Length: 126
Ligand SMILES: N[C@@H](CCC(=O)N[C@@H](CS)C(=O)NCC(=O)O)C(=O)O
Image (cartoon, rainbow, N blue to C red; front, side):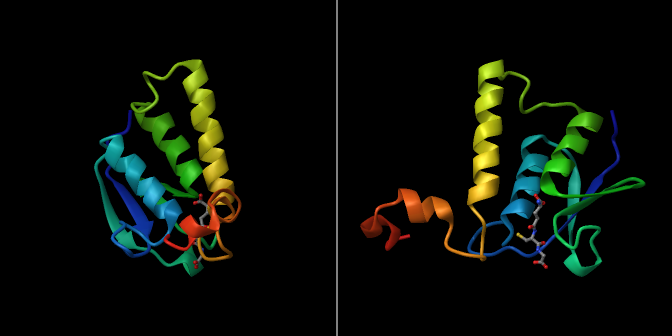
């Protein structure tokens, strides 16, 4: 198990959230919930391996993409968050993660979840 401190490259906090990017928020939430020591720095997506953030540096490794980051951290530091889940709960978690990752896209268009699932009178209050 690695004990190297992780550096998370991200954007900036916004709207009372830790980051304006949901993917950076996700990576940071994982680090916090898993109790992995880390620091953050302002990233530059133009210099990132996939031109997107988040990216982590973990010793000699540079890992882009929030899913790849979580997979890397689970591989190198274990899976503290999923340890007590049943197979069924893991399947539900995968489905929910996939749905949110695909449907709740920030910025490009109104999130599909809001467009299709929330009645107009509720959507106008969001
Ligand atoms: N699949 C990637 C998506 C990351 C992503 O789309 N990041 C956006 C911000 S939400 C980004 O860095 N875009 C480039 C830019 O804004 O300069 C992940 O899960 O980390």
